[in-house]
Image (cartoon, rainbow, N blue to C red; front, side, top):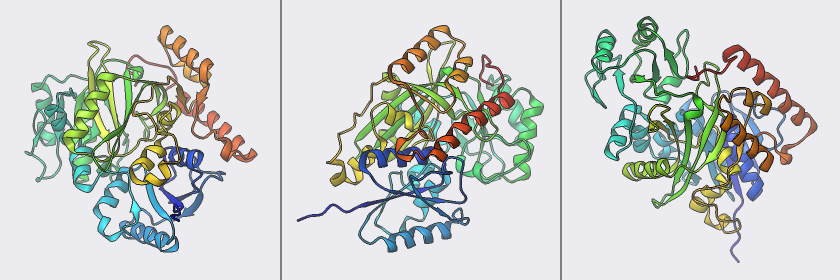
Length: 432
């Protein structure tokens, strides 16, 4: 008789997105996860959900390969599934795939596709092919090899030509500044570095560009038009395209509040799920054009001036806030199992391609969230969602509910309130 092999789920890193995926897998399948972490993290502390392996060298590619191969050797009878929510890990796994035990299953795109879609310049070019609007952009380069290369809207320019090029393309302050490659941004450091820069003047822009010049930054920095509307006009869209090319997940939500610390700026902290058919269809076109496989997370915005959808980027991974997808009715672990572990998927309900339940996902206290919602109609809708189904928080898991863990997660609420008081004390019309 055929016996279904047990699954060993290894998460790389200890962020809330990895925890959320591990929770989804544990709730549905009972898989006992393992977390490979540089250090104990905020989101994993006092958790009993996953066995934690502290590996300070795991950001070294050779060491990461060694850790995965040792884990595989120690579990010869298991199905092996590796999961991460960090671009650097996705790219490293793709680059070194031939050195990693072939038994490891990976719900990510390959290296060629990663490089094609994760660079925001290439992303805009693909969007143009399938009729998706992206922001007006000036790409600034810092190495001889990048300056002059063709980008969406024109060639990559150097720092001395950036301001004049902006003026020629009609970009006015304030503008948004962001890296073309999140993986390259991970490796650079300078005073005042942020995940996303809100630049009010030429002086602020040139200060960032000069730091990147001094660092010989290897990819482009993008200066983009500011699409009008506060952060409630932002949207998150999570998708999965299977190893056979079938799109098996398209889920979305309206962002209610973003994080505002320098290192997490722009990451959703609260989402009200919704099915935006126009945006879901656009994402499906993009994934098919790119011949994409695995999880993808899109950021787009609905302009408060025109109502048009403007896509900013696709992250070649599931996204930190993926619990909103599971909360809405499409368990993300089931989506992966259906593709890569069909024997296990047979024992679980088939998830919908597009979940339609309207639920409230939030990692911030509810009363604080309401303070940041300026639209009375939206406030009322959010209150209704809470009354109907409660608030879905990935760290509040009964299956990981020791008293110490519960008290610690509650204490995180107080820490978040203090962070918002420091970095974003009052809501603004722009979200900055």
